[in-house]
Length: 77
Image (cartoon, rainbow, N blue to C red; front, side, top):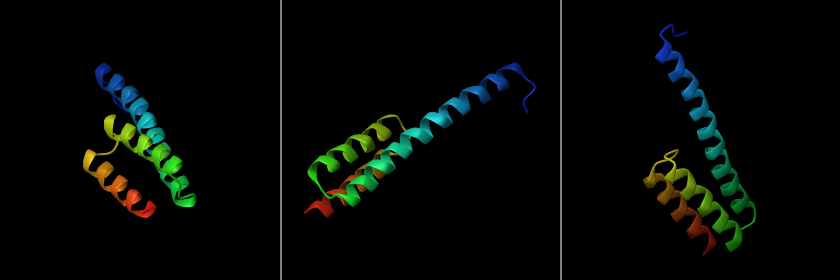
C-alpha cells in the first residue's frame, strides 16, 4: 500500500477509472453480443454507438473500434 499522500490519491483515482473502463468495455461487448444473436440494423446501430463511445473515452483504441465495426458490418450483408 502507498504511504505518500499523493500516491494514496492516485490509487483511489485509478480504482474509479478502472471501474468506469470496465463498465464501458462491458457495455460495448454486450452490445456486440446482442448484435451477433439478432442480426438487425437496430442492434447494429446500438453496437456501433457503444463501440464509438468506448473509443471516444479511450477505453479501446480507435483502430480496434474501426476493425470491430467493419467486421460487424460485414455480417449484416
